[in-house]
Length: 399
Image (tube, rainbow, N blue to C red):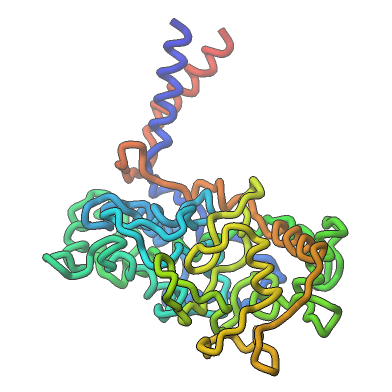
């Protein structure tokens, strides 16, 4: 009997915590700490779309809501998963009708901290706001592409009928109107909020005045990897990774060219020179030490050493006139770093220190829908049930 009562009480507690947004107690998105060593010019938040708790909460719901696809099967989170730093384990992601998309889903964590404010692998989006609704309007990805009455206006009408948006949009935007711009603003606020700065790198960086100083909490191998990452080959025998992916945010510098990976998924004879963007190198690896999905725009690299070997000897391709200048020698051939195996392994060890913790576990970035894919927006949980459940559980364990 007691076991049955315990099961009921635990289930009741779970139900109270699942699929509920309490608008009187928003989670904190707007006042997250940013370390002093992160330059303020790294923040690409526009003046007209500062992160608010109400706006990012709305963005969180939109991000996980499968209603944003025409057949209610795909959400943004279907291809950008919290447990993978908001990337995907698939080589290229799958759209709403089982069709494959053109490229691998880029990690979204730390999108806010990038001097390059254009998005997508080919930088076709002029801002993070512009990026957010393009997958929604893609024929393969989420389907609101304007064919057969499935334009963005039809999505707005669809969202307007849902109770949770009737509650959340007025809290984020005073008149409560649903528009494409406001969908963009809310999604961008949520994505920009994805930060934690609690990696071992951050612990070490807070202890020293500059990145070039050995970190007290690093092993000798990790400090060697950091030196190799930051230094050029000519200046101390480094790998010059930091030229393009600069610390402490490890974002991609603006106006970069492609990195010499020009393959196209599914077509061994094709080349694509337009992929000139990348995510931050933070959280390449998850807390389990495994990669957060395959790497590069086509997901063609499944081991970090493949990436390092690529940069160690960039292939020369006379057709690739869009390659980044920093990866080409004066004679026009690809760079040759001649890294030893120990040096390569040291760089890997350093990259693993960029793995954070909270980004994978914090409720504010988790799925707000319950297992039935429903959600309730409330002004507070039913306190009498919370009190009853708490008292009952206490009495159970004391009896």
